[in-house]
Image 1 (cartoon, helix red, strand yellow):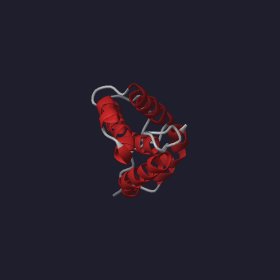
Image 2: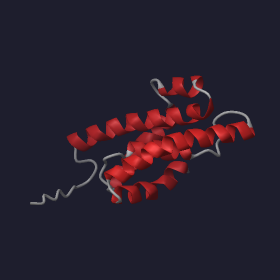
Image 3: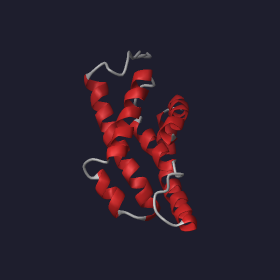
Image 4: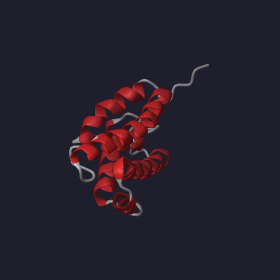
Length: 138
């Protein structure tokens, strides 16, 4: 549900421009780590299901520099969720080996980075993300 709830945030931040979007992503990482660390200290255990800030950041990373078309959002959502659930490559290793707030956040950050790289390839090599209008100002 955290990823689904992030869609309006992605759209809003993209409308505010790339600097604001990237600033939010950069700011959310230390804030998320601290929040997860505090939550884990108060509740005990690791990576509670109630924590969704990691999914928010992961999906924001997935959608960096992407067009805001329904196709891009759908493909980005599916890619991020697939990587977050299956934890392939080194994502599973990060999830198991790193503890604390950083451990909660890092697997979703890694999934977001991989999904973003895949999205960049899709964006530059196909038209799967929908039509784009390029405005050239003189």
